[in-house]
Amino acid sequence: MENLYKELGIDEDVWQLGEKICECLKERFTEIDATAEYNQLKVLQAMQAERVSEACLSGSTGYGYNDLGRDTLERVYAGVFHTEDALVRPQITCGTHALALALMANLRPGDELLSPVGKPYDTLEEVIGIRESKGSLREYGISYAQVDLLQEGEPDYEGIRKAITTKTRMVTIQRSKGYEPRKTLSVDKIGEIISFIKSVKNDVICMVDNCYGEFVERIEPTDVGADLAVGSLIKNPGGGLAPIGGYIAGKREYVEQAAYRLTSPGLGKEVGASLGIMPAFYQGLFLSPTVTASALKGAVFAANILESLGFQVLPDGKESRHDIIQAVTFGTPEGVIAFCKGIQAAAPVDSFVSPEPWDMPGYDSKVIMAAGAFVSGSSIELSADGPIKPPYAVYFQGGLTFPHAKFGILKAVQELKNSGIIRL
Ligand SMILES: *Cc1c(COP(=O)(O)O)cnc(C)c1O
Image (cartoon, rainbow, N blue to C red; front, side, top):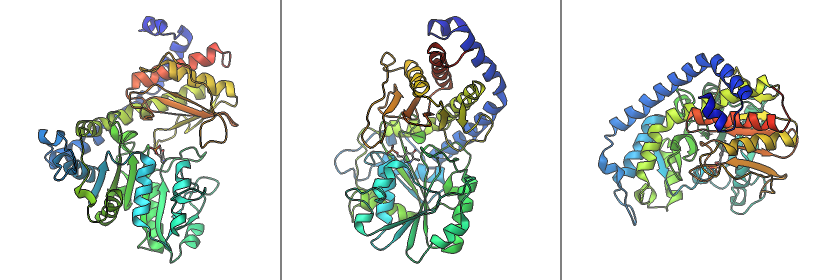
């Protein structure tokens, strides 16, 4: 083993450190495996209950009327999330699209959307109209209110109570921290926030942005009162196999609204050919619990090894996890760049290219990204990105298998060592 690592550019010191850290994580990994086991059974149970058959794996074309695979898969998702209904489509192009769809479908002019957990994910700013953009909710006369989390990352319940008015129709709760320096919310905490909101105004639609959170815990936001859970299939629930897609699971009424918005009033869920995508959607969902567990182990391994090297990590090495994102603060551009180069060098695809910081559209600083993925932009696959600005942090996620995630992190540590940023 050590020789093979050596051939792949990992020296003895880095390898030894990796082994030492892995040794300490056995208990942690056993816990993650138990969650994966539970969620694997949950997915299987839903697939069996809906009698998934070979016929479900072939696709429709054209209008896609009576697409057995598509309709059954949507019932499987509803089964997994314990909801009345779900919309799971390749025509939902990404996570942002799924979230925009759920919002635009369920809000009407004069309504207000509330985020009780601070600023939402960057791309949602343009959906809502926080940053001016064409076609935003704001353009349609839908207003937005926000209550920031308190210093310790706790919800500001008094602030939320005051922010709920007769206009408040929908609430968006982001589970993952995204690029914010806050903690990711546990499903229990999300349940607490939803209960509070419903106690103030019980007809508010509570939507959870579930991106990066699926299958990290045994329960999902829809198990604790969320009316809608929304996410991307090129993150956790696609299991690395889905090449596109998004899902919206929840109360039938709200899912239906989303279907009418996605296709057309009058058509809703009845149209939308699945083409040849069903095998990837089914098999991806089937693999998702163990793939998510692999990514989670990678994040825990990264937190512990980088913490041992003196870097600030969020979540820290010991904390419980509610999504698959790991943030590491390097404090210097060189640290960010070296880490990303290491991740790239470990990739199965494009391992020979060297990522460079560039001026990406929509960002206010240069950004460096490492991704050598089978599915372009997939962040359930091993990937990292870091804006080149203080505090010089990298956001790291994914890994379809733990050995790959481990190798990527060892490569990153090696790169930090080779460029003189750390000494072992
Ligand atoms: C990734 C992500 C999104 C947006 O998903 P895309 O597929 O990139 O459009 C929204 N919210 C959160 C928390 C995310 O992590």
